[in-house]
Structures are given as structure tokens and as C-alpha cells.
Amino acid sequence: MEKINKKALAKALSYAEYRELTDRLVVENKTTGPNQSEAMLHYTKMNGVRMKRLDKTTKLTDDSINLLSQIDQPQTWLVLTEAWCGDAAQVLPVMNKFAAANTNIDLKLIMREEHLDIMDAFLTNGSRSIPKLIVIDQQGEEVVATWGPRPAEVQKMVMDGKLKSMKIENKEERKAFNDEVKVDVQRWYIKDKTIQIQQELLNAVLSKQFA
Image (cartoon, rainbow, N blue to C red; front, side, top):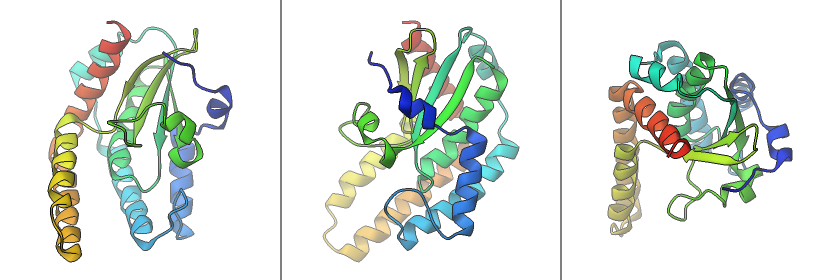
């Protein structure tokens, strides 16, 4: 697989730096990326609350700990994200817990809109979907695995929602439906308590690396 530009890695943020950035932006009533609409600002504020909660409550399962032990060589986990992304807010705290549990994982975050060249090399069904994890072997500097943007069950909810939304002609009804899908997605994440996220993410990463 292809290599990642070293300049992008040099500009990447640690998880702590990303959290500091998003918290500061909320205070300034801003978000990342060019879209500074009220909706995006609202999502960013909500995501700050979600990440703060997940930073405190996320616990790795025994299966996750066992899978993490299989990562025995240094690698970089580069994630494309944005502060307004609801899925990223649910997934990034889990990735941070993984990195904290295994020193071979160096978690780095970059903004999608600032690195569209990288994003366009890792599309999901032709879409610039985030968060997108790119696992890089630090020795060979090669991309060895990818994951994202969300667990399979949530991805199906989102894609089915998009198909149904396209058939709704009334703008207000379409917006109400899309808002309902977003609520259903967040309910799924709350019910899951990061369990399926942990399983799918690690299984995807390890199966691609050691296939």
C-alpha cells in the first residue's frame, strides 16, 4: 500500500492536543474546517461533552487487551477527523485507550479539510467519510491497514438513512428524518458502550496486517 507524506505526520496532533484544540474552539464559538455554521458549532459542543464522558468511562474488554498484545511492533495510527464529526467523538476516545494500553501505538490526528489529498486516497464508497484510521508501519513507513468511518451496524443505519432521505421531497420532512437518524445513531453508541467499536476496530486492523 502507499506511503503517507511525512509533512502530514509532522503536523499531526496527539489526542491530548486535539482535545485542547476542540475545547478552545468551543470557547471561541468555532469549529474546525471551513463550515462555521450554527449546526456545526452545535455538533462540536456536543462532541466535546461526549469525548469528556468517554474519556472517563471507556474500559477495554479482556478481548481487546488480548488483541492489543498482538501489536508487537511500533506503528502510527493516523486518523483523519474534524471537531464536528459525531462518529469521531465516539471512536477517538477508544483509540486513545488503545494507544495508552500499548506503547507500540502512536496515535496522531489530522484534519480532513487540511489534508484532502490523503483523504481522497482512502475514500469509503467514494465518500470522504470520517473518522478514517490509517495504520502505518513505522519501520517501512508503509500503510498496513485502515478502518472507518464507523462500526458496520452504524454504517448500515447511515447508508439506509441516506437512501430513504433521497426519496423524501419535502425539505422539512427530509430534515426531520435525517435528524431522527442522527439521534438513532447516538442511541446506538450509548447502548454499545464502545464494545462493538473495540471489537471491529481491532479485528479489522489485525486481520489486514497479518493476513
